[in-house]
Image: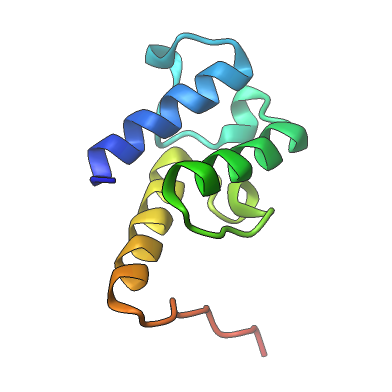
Length: 94
């Protein structure tokens, strides 16, 4: 899914969960600001997996708290999925 399609799709899904018009969702604002709850975050993971075939962590919306951040993460996962290389994990704090 191209990056702009990912953004649009994520915005539409989040708007659906929050019962808001998609135009009211700013992709740079933390989803918690809009009242995204854990049940919505888990539903989003299921929707992402069904739409893209990518496996994502159940903490996706908390680890990547904006639509921009989620879209960037999914784009990275898709890129690694195509190349067969595993995605890089951030180093654990010392």
